Amino acid sequence: MEIAKIVLEYLKVVIWPSIVIVGGYAMREHLATLFGRIQAISTPAGDLEFAADVNHLHDAALEAAVDTEAEAATLTHPLSHSEPPDAQEAFVVLREVAETAPEAAIMAAWRRVELRLAEAHAVVEGAPTGTQQARRVFPVTPRRWIDQIVAAGLDADIADIVSELITLRNRAAHSADISGISALEYVESCAVVWELLGRFLDSYRGTSLVSRSASDI
Image (cartoon, rainbow, N blue to C red; front, top):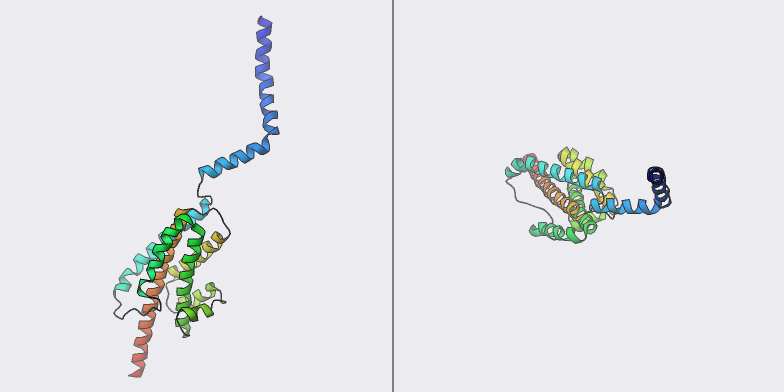
């Protein structure tokens, strides 16, 4: 009996680990798939890096809005945007879309910023403004507009945020792992930048008007 117990203990110590190793190797592909599914479940956002970048961008956009609040309060001339006064309502809709169609919300939100960016570029260049005219200049890459708008007075930090919006939009176009929360933060960032570009337009138009008036005196 003692010999039998010794043999049994030997089998437990030596053979059982070997069985586990051999079995694990034979099922390595199945285990890899299983671990991949577990990882996907533990990170429902899919692209954690994208989520972190959007969150950082959202914070930067809000900070830029706070920094320009005092300047915006000093404006005395009326708004002159080509878009209707209730244009911000589009972002309200996109906030809801972000929950069910994250990628679509991101594309649509960027489109609104792109239109406003095109309008700002047209104003700076002295070209016709408005939605239809802005669409005509779209063959030019939006990144090429930014330097010209910055030279005309747009804050460099806002320009950096716009550039990052472009980068994240392009990443979202090739990803199927965007969470609703990340899309919502992107939409919110676009809404803030859309407003900041509008304030720039007000300021630039007001400055241009004052300059023309002074030159006529």
